[in-house]
Image 1 (cartoon, rainbow, N blue to C red):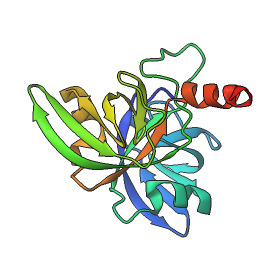
Image 2: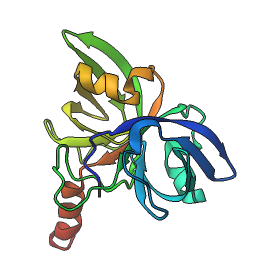
Image 3: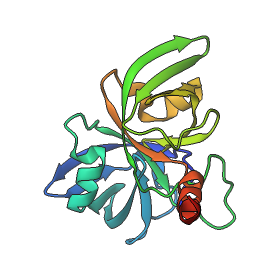
Image 4: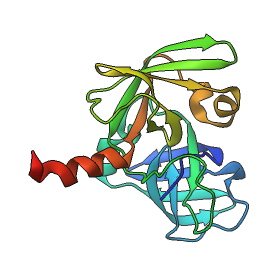
Amino acid sequence: MFTGIIQAVGEILSFENGILWIDSKDLILTPVQRGESIAVNGVCLTVVDESNRKLKFDLSPETIQKTTFGHPTLSKQVNLERALALGDRLGGHMVQGHVDGFAQIINITPQGNSTIFEFEISESKYLIDKGSVTLDGISLTVVGPASNRFQVWVIPHTLAETNLSSKSIGDFVNLEFDMIPKYLERLLEPYK
């Protein structure tokens, strides 16, 4: 379980044959254990090796296919968050690290002290205005969902502390909807 509050921006060192190496930069304040879960661009991955701040992950074909790790526009910069520990503050929202799909950036607009990112997605039934969404692992608030588009308004701190600052129009990000509406839909299914 994660919160969507990014702890560091790492860099992809290599990604071949399902093996991903990342320079974790400032993420490692305490030692990382083999088997530990880390959200990498919002994807829950298991650390299989660690050496001098470099983390190794094995990605299954399913993970590569369903996330931006299999996408040609994969950025070198990745958002990193260690799993939530019991007693930690839940600053964002409850995030599983199970990606639901992609969102494509279709517009980036400066607005006062914020930056508005507009996204297009294939399905928007789980989006509600002022609800939560996770984009590349970042917990953000949905603004004005309409049809298959929505916006997020990003404050300067979030822009500076995540990989959003390196994103451009046309880029894809990993999308995880808030888990509450997904569970509610499943629970209410027999009553339709």
